[in-house]
Length: 378
Image (tube, rainbow, N blue to C red; front, top):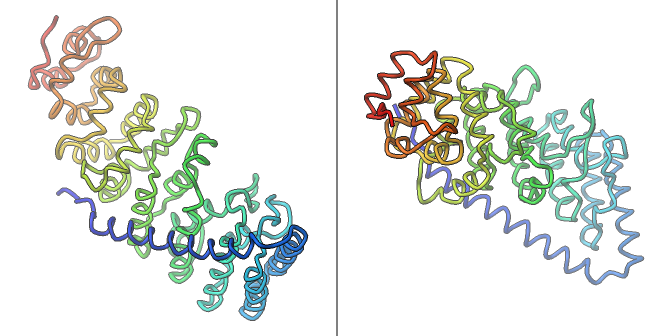
C-alpha cells in the first residue's frame, strides 16, 4: 500500500519553522539595536564579560548554577554583549557546542529548560554557532551535528540513553541552529553534513518515531537533500541506509511531485549529478529487500527521480540491463518507454540491441524489455 506523503504535517512544520525564524530575527534585531550604539571599548569589555560568564558553566549542570549563569548572561545581552569572542576550538575553553554535546547529561526538565534558554540567548547574541566545536575523539564537531546525531539515535537506544524529555528539548534546539546553517556553508564544505549525520546515524526508535519523521520534514522545508554532496563524499552505505528505511521515510526523502513540495524537489534536482544517481542505484542492489522496496515505491506512478536518472545517467540503465536488475528496471520501463527507446550507449546501441548482444543478459530481462516494446534492433 502506498504511504502518502504527510503534506498536512509538512505544511504545519513549514509554518512552525517560519514562526521560530521570525521570533529569532525579532529578538536579534532588538539586541542589534542596543549593540550598534556601543562604543568599541565598551563592546569589547561586554564581550569578554559574556565569554567569562558562559565559561563559568563548564560542566556544572545543577539547576541553581545554570540559573545564576542565565541571569548573568541575560543582563549582559540586554546591555549589548555578544558571544563573538567565545572559543571555537574543540580543545579550547568551554563553548556553545560543548553545552549542546553535554545536554544528554542534564536529566531534570527544569534544568533542561534553563540550558535551552542559555543556548537561545547565546545564539541571539551572535555567537559563531557554525564554527564552535566540541571534541569527539578524532576532531571537533559543531553543535548542529551533535543535535542531528542525538535526534537520529532516538530515545533510550544503545548508543545514547536519551530520555523522552531530553529528546524533546534537543528537537526544540534543532531550528535554533538550523536557521544559521546556510546553503553557502554547506556548499563550501562540499556536503550537507547535518543531513548526512542524521541519516548515517539513524536508529530504529519506536518511542521517537514521530519526531524522527518530523525532523526529516524539517530538513525538507530547509531544502536539505541526500544529494547535496560532491563525488568525493559519495558513500553507498549512506544511500543503502535510505533504501532500507521505513517505507514512509522513503516517501518523505523521495516524494512524488506535488506543487507544495516544489521548493524541495527543485533543490534536490539542482544538486543531483550522474555520480549520485549511480551510487544511489548501486546501493539499492546490495540486498533483495532494498530492490523490492525500490520497485514497489517508484512504480506507484511516474517519479521525477527516475526521469532524471534517464537524462543525467543514461549509462546506468544499460548497466541495470547487463546486471539483470529487473526490480530496478521495472519503474523505468513502466512509465518511460518513449525516453528509453531513444537511448544509445557509446557504441550507438539501443537498449534492446544492447540486451540481445551482451553476454550474461538472461531471458527474463529480455522478456521485460520485449513487454515494453524495447527489443527492436537498429
